[in-house]
Image (tube, rainbow, N blue to C red; front, side, top):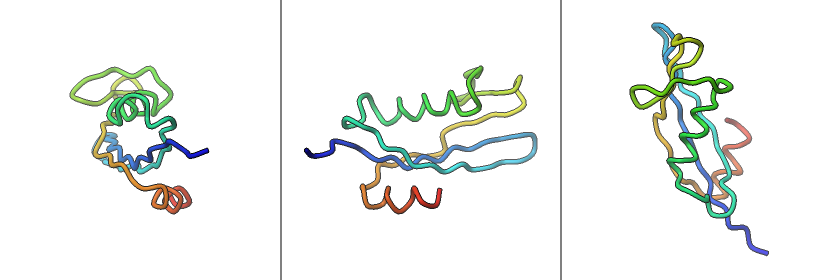
Length: 89
């Protein structure tokens, strides 16, 4: 049986006070990624710090507004790229 998966490379940008961080992750989107890649990325972003997020300015504020996280970029990748990247990110 053939897999019907898409693979996603996702980069989130976190702003915490004067500091900025980039979080890179890879994800397997089963069943051809029901919904869009953007929807999946938004759901992942909303739960990044365990929920309780306030949506604003295209991203989410966490911890009472102390931390802001937004999607920096996302890209569909091949299964081969996914297999390599998941070992390192």
